[in-house]
Amino acid sequence: MPAKPKPPLPPRRAPERIGSTADLRAFQRLMMQAVTRPLARGQRADRRWADGRPAAAVVGTFSAPNSRLTGLERIEIYNRMYWFRTLDSLYEDLPGLRAVLGERRFLRLIEAYLGRHPSRSFTLRDLPSRLAGFVRRTPHLTMPHTALAVDMAAFEWAQVECFDAAAHPPFTPADLAGQPAGRLRLGVQPHVRLLALRHPVDEFALAIKDAALRGDASNAVGAAGAHRGRAARRQVRRPRPASTWLAVHRHEGKIYYKRLEAPAHRILTALRAGRTLAQAVAAAGRGVTPEQVRTWFTTWMQLGWFCRRS
Image (cartoon, rainbow, N blue to C red):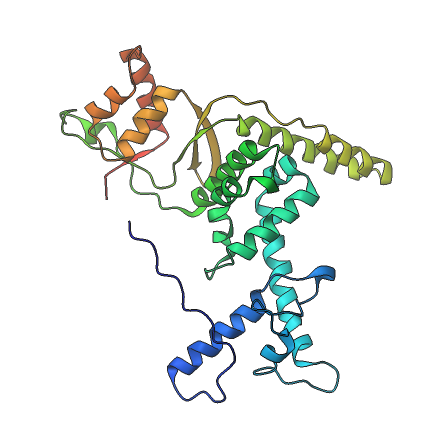
């Protein structure tokens, strides 16, 4: 797949007047850069532009002062709103990654991530889409828990994808009757996300959720209960490495994650890649019995994981 073209760079200053669509686009790019720049210390707008110029001089080409605020201070309001909202969105979407890293290191990671990968979408839903890759490329931000952080970021992004991915009419046993395995190609529902991980993050996520529920219950009895709730969260131990295969899927409007055996994961991955049913079953490898394959497919059919390939 060819790489997406990079968006044009913002101009060094705003056009003196908007006389064309090109002028409007240039102004919008500059305004976007001003609003989405990473905040500096004290959660304030950085007083230096990315190229070293005084930010006030750049922003002053399109933001005029008023009786109370400079042009930069006026834009700073939107700059801070953008950062606080995007940080809050990732904070809410990634409780597992927060538990892996701790609050302070988590915030440092996602501030660096947003500085490198600012939002390019109309929806905050897409913010974590490149986070697992970013964690892998910047291990100094998450050491010594980088491998676990990569797994958890991938796991939590899979849940976001699963939540609103498409669901096609499922295959039924009647649809499969008489179809030769050597020619039949089954589609895997778009909402089924297949993961091959190095840590049992599903168990860790459940433990975090359980600790949070116990903490919320403790909060009802006052400050001492709140302290016990925070302590319960801290007591959830990070999991040891263990190869883990998961399917994150949606059933009746709710998100679930199901453990898979390695051969079962290989079958589903092969089907998603367009292999025939016979090829996918062969991809499971030696030692897999017909009874195992039959049991897996019965479960997957009941969950509605198969559909026609688009």
